[in-house]
Length: 408
Image 1: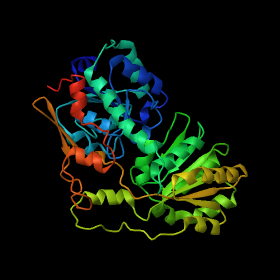
Image 2: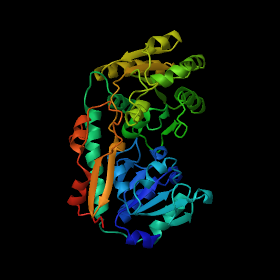
Image 3: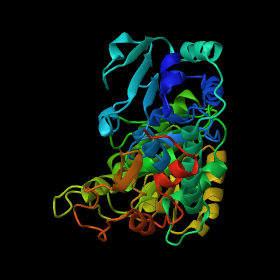
């Protein structure tokens, strides 16, 4: 293992839930070896997201930096990561070594051919590596990864900090972060809220959150919140779901009322199955299928079921909505916020195609992006960045050149 790291120019850690409570030790190892850290989605919160070497989550819901950096890595070290979407990521390039660290031998080679399998608990592996490894003074690839991710955060912070009318998802998550406690439990339903949670929600090691990650079961948000409140009655519990998922299980609000469960329920309402719409954007099907939803007043529906509610349509209304929610929760009652958000597609990191040719980055817009011709014709990276109001984003080659990363 140490020889592989010594000979690698562009190594990356891909870390899953198996790291458990060893996030701080992993950060120490990352600093020592100058290896950036990419997390699987379900491991969000186990590593301090303020650590500069934490460059986000890979795949569609993740960051531009994580997707770009894993696509040019020459050594991927998967630690405690059962990554079910591996076939969407690992085969995107071929010229790298793959190491898998897992406590279950049956997992070896399940997602990618192994160059080395290490049968170990993730935390024990990290401890041994800290003990036996030699500090690396500098690694251009690490420096480029940090700078690339800081550029991505600049864009994310812009969308997070601005005010919006009509309401956009980032401002809703900003407000949730402001009222959440260090041990808040979030029950997340599936869809675009998965992307927004991974990009905007602040999750620490004392928080708990759950989502139907593999099967993407719509309607799991409120039942998960009920289970959380029954098991952790003294902790703040929040359910987040889109209007499609909420309409499947909204009758469970009666259960929250009956058992006096002070749960904050958030419905992101925009009359479309947004995550599926984004997928169909990139499928040559000429038209959309089964994604349009009828509008409804979910606040009135909630009130009809005995749960107080309010509707917000712009970011300036969020503080007032939160004030009402806090009052209800403090009185031991559930509350619902009907957030009427836009149906904007989140920045599509999956539209970026990264290849290495003759020691240079070839980064382009994927040929399958917008093949449904539902959006303006976009062929270049500047056009893609401009369409998503992300003009501050820079192509990967900028960071490769700035930090003299060797791609040979």
